[in-house]
Amino acid sequence: MSSPHARAGDRTARVMLQVALAAIPGVLALVVYFGIGVLINIALCTVTALLCEAGVMKLRGRPVAFYLKDYSAFITALLLGIALPPYCAWWLPVVGSAAAIILSKQLYGGIGYNPFNPAMVGYVVLLISFPVEMTRWVGPGELIMGSPSISEAFALVFGNYSIDGFTRATPLEIVRLNQSVLLSQLYETEPMLARGNLAGFGWEAVNAGFLLGGLYLLYRGIITWHAPVGMLATILLLSLMFYDSGSSLSEGSPILHLFSGATMLGAFFIITDPVSGATSNRGRLIFGIGVGLITYVIRAWGSYPDAVAFAVLLMNFAAPTIDNYTLPRTYGHKAPRKATDVEEQ
Amino acid sequence: MATPSYGEITRNGLWGNNPALVQLLGLCPLLAVTGTVVNAIGLGLATIAVLTCSNLAVSLVRHQMPDTVRLPASVMIIATFVTCTELLMKAFTYELYLVLGIFIPLIVTNCAILGRADAFASKNPVLPSLVDGFTMGLGFTAVLITIGAVREILGQGTLFADMDLLLGPMAADWGINVLGADYPGFLVAVLPPGAFLVTGMLIAAKNAIDASIERRRSQQVKVVAGAKRVRTTGKIT
Image 1 (tube, chains in turn blue, orange):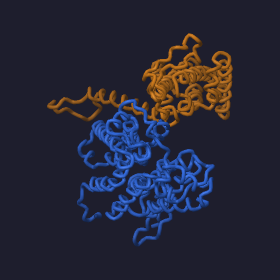
Image 2 (image 1 turned 90 degrees about the vertical axis):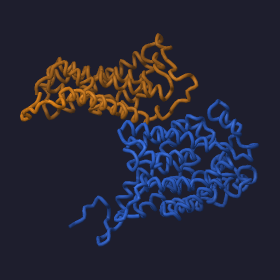
Image 3 (image 1 turned 180 degrees about the vertical axis):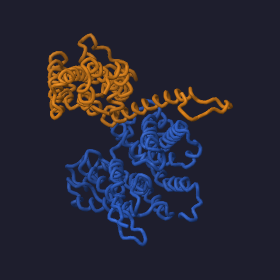
Image 4 (image 1 turned 90 degrees about the horizontal axis):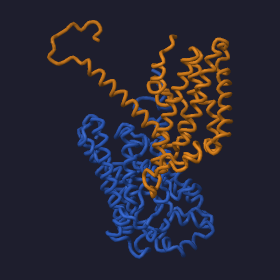
């Protein structure tokens, strides 16, 4: 709906609810393979995010209910809750979503003004502050004699029950840490890769779930294809170039990179953020390509197994520059070279 | 320019024109070494010493200094006192000197010091310059210590840890575990982003306090509703 007939005042809320709806298949896959940890994370993040949002709104003298009803804080909390490792201690989601809402969103002026993606800021604050806790992912239930039960889950999150018995290396970590073994051998010996089809048991289903949700968002016109296609095509191209048919130094197959880690979540739910991303379609394409490039470079040669959050934040820095050089041509005018050029009258 | 009164100089140095919170000068050491209280105090004391001495010296030679070489001459004077401080720290607090490392010699480039030398000491008599240098240094140190305390508590859960680096063995067990022994440590507070965040929060807090003082002051002269109409031309006091 565009300007002359715009009358949908709650458009933000409707878009946000569609995004939440689209996240259901991915979250469902996370629950099926990794247990209910992700739901506890989402609940903790949501409560903290809404409290922080309401608190800041009260301090700023703005109507609290009006801003809570746009669901943007809930979406931030949802995405952060999905990204955090399941069954992590309760204070990780609490600190992360407080950082996301207060530091990254409200300090910059609230919804529509944040230059960085709030969920990813929350995630990165946690990742660089608590690297040990943030890199302990539980294995899929079938590989570890069953996911934690509900009582075990609450003991893990709120008690001091050790998570060590449940954790397994993620597929990206396995490929990274075994640089002296042929990929084909890894796929035979590592249960995580052997049980899965191509990109790791459980992980490929989760990514397929988010891909499905992303296609729904595309179908509903909530997002455009430019950013996701840019990111996924870049990762595909780079992983093809450095696959070298699976030698011990291989960086992993294209399927592994596309369907493991946070690839699909990032491509369809994170980099399509209308506020912190680029604005024009051409800009979105470049933004996506940049995220894909940085993600792959850090995965292959950096010191972290996955890098979608870092890539998104780095490209958030670049988004204003991208916008400046990708100004769309206004009908009846010559194509501008960049937005900061003053057009001659 | 008339020399301000001592009270005004002190108020400016400590609060109104605080080098760290208002002038935003000397941010490099401010951000780099405020991970713990002991580092903050060490660098703060060194800065006070250099700032006081350099203001004194610059003020003494202000009539002999040609305008064209004003800045190089000031820098030479400052560098002299920084070298003295560095050697003193090497002699008496060697461990702390090792911790602070390059940031002691870098005091030479601290804009807060050159700024005071040029903006105040080169234009004012000796005694006001001395007071200005000391209070500015004190204001800077107070901010350093506040940031250091917040970052130490958030980052490591301790306060006054390793004070023996500065004060000798008698301060060895001054460290307090504020947040308990099994606090995991919020690493981001120790890293550079934490320094920026805490500094930003302090600046915001100072502005908020100033605004509330201003609001209270303006409320006192508010005209009471229902008062008789009065002539409003001219200044209402």
